[in-house]
Length: 166
Image 1 (tube, rainbow, N blue to C red):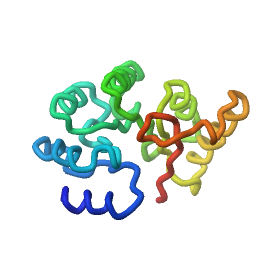
Image 2: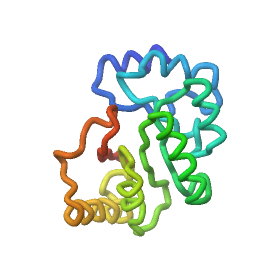
Image 3: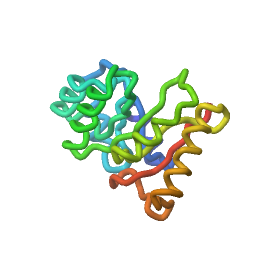
Image 4: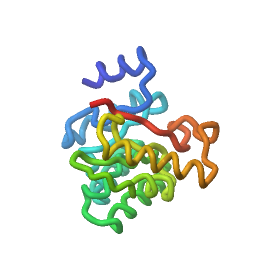
């Protein structure tokens, strides 16, 4: 699998690889990071579960360089902030992510901008709960002066917006 993922990263303009291996394949995640690190982010979702204990283990193993942060996956804003802080202290990129079954509440856009997330993952605009978050990002841009020219490559740690078609 590592050879396949590395080949794709070399062949296509891939910015990040989310859960490139099984969530409990701790032996091989460092090998994946070694192969594609610097070319694409090695983004842990199921590997890390926004869980500080799993993040610490990944840090020790050098298993990832980016966190997919899902506040409602860990259970509290306090725990999510601890996960975010651990990732930032390690110079990891952080993608703030919604989860399936979201509502039209757009607070996640404020959290992603307020905490300085590198990316936000909310999906394509095919559903109203996703569109609400994009609309909130546009409101933040208009009032806070954020603009596309201030957003840069997520590999160097600045805000970007990514979508996931479903």
